[in-house]
Amino acid sequence: MNENIEASSNPARRLGSYSTAKVSRGRVERLERHATRLRRDARRLGLPVPDRREIERTFLEAAAESFAGADGIVRIEWSHLPGEAPKLIASPRVYASLPAAWRAATSSVVHPGREFRANTKYVDVDAYDRSREDVANSDYDEVLLFDAGGNLVEGSQSNCLAVLADGRLITPTLEAGGVEGIGLAIVRDDYPELYETWISGESLDDAHELMSVNTVRGVVPIVELDGKAIGAGVAGPWAIRLAAIFARH
Image (tube, rainbow, N blue to C red; front, top):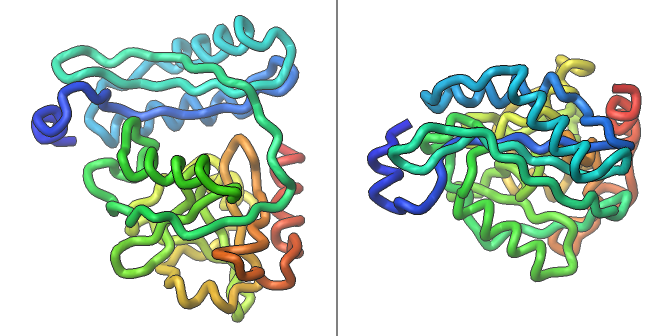
């Protein structure tokens, strides 16, 4: 990571990555995966690698202090200000219920591409912040980010899965710059045939299914994009099948 470029352009912004875990009845789901992801992303960004036990302890203490046996969400950053050492920062928040199927729109933001982030869940990315504002200021549940060439990259808070006319289950290639998320890895564990490729916006016009996936929400069908129904406009067989993976895990 070129910290000099980042620091000179915006010295107040933190540098590093984060991972967000769901807390169910006080238990941090997939704790080991979140710790592994933070350590992996630290290596990709050229940061010191945090201690696994310290990451897990930070997650567990934040969950216990904030939720005491209830449901919630805990975000842990491994980040720093320019010139300082990285540290773990916990940010608990309420788990808000969302519809079982989502309506989505194209984000007003063009995805910036891979840049220096190396497919990590990087803190303080303008494009992500602005795309989440798109969601907050609309009636949609998610917005999808496309690159300058019109290719789907990811959602504002999720990776994307699609089933196109040929029946294959596909996801946008990581070369496009999306986050390499835990939810996506869970799907790939059960379905190694998941195909990674460039997905044009035009190809989504004939999609049989479109889905959002992240480790907090699992797999959620997107039944409408920009006011047009996807497939039959209801959760399809792939969405139902993949959602069951997260229930099992």
